[in-house]
Figure 1 (cartoon, rainbow, N blue to C red):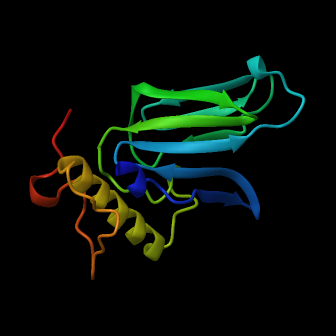
Figure 2: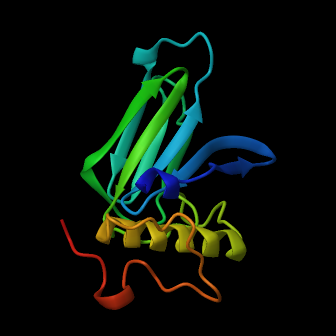
Length: 158
């Protein structure tokens, strides 16, 4: 049932009208998807993940991404992989349940409506996680949604 509350679509991060990457999030992770250029050997790509910073590029060239993150991540459980010409970066949120309006600090934020939709989806994911016998995939909120990170005592730490 949890997969019913997974992100339905990825958000596009644009710069000067060009798609830089796509991203989505769950209660615990922010996922970044970067289309890789053709004819570059996989061993040439690199990704450095720090608590509040990410750098991505091709060795010997200026970085493709070199930005501060919106919020801190757990570096020991964040990682990256190359899959079918896509670099997939999985950032483990330090604050589980926090709604990110963008992976990159100060850039490409979702509009308030899209951010509210993300917060509602994450709240339903939290309800699903805490009540595995119930199906929250058709549940809806009317009005504003509480913060999934702090609602009713917050999310229990693993």
